[in-house]
Image (cartoon, rainbow, N blue to C red; front, side):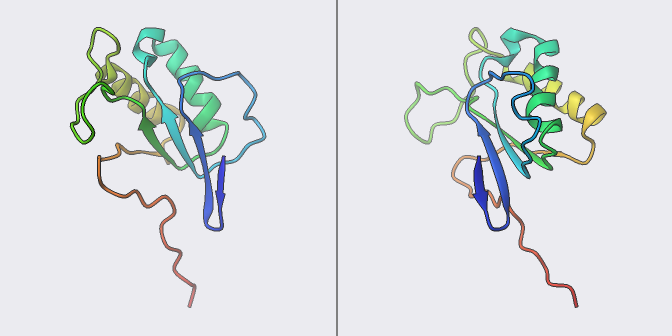
Length: 125
């Protein structure tokens, strides 16, 4: 958990979780480790989403750890499908979001582009 004056970010680098562990944790943003989720099945992915996104009340989710780490830095390609199918995982995550957390944005990070985690707050007039 990373706290900032403008919000909190939960970083879960793996696709693992322990049910109930985050029930009292609140986060604005979740960095959701997704490598290997397609191999665990949609039912697991739904439980994972609930434990890390629904339970924390996150409004924004960024999938992380889905690239092929054997490539040179800056060369972007997904993990070989024989190891993990991120395409299936992305579809499942969006379907789950549309049912359980419609106000939550699922956003793909773009290599080399900064991510603004907490949009600037405009003062009330």
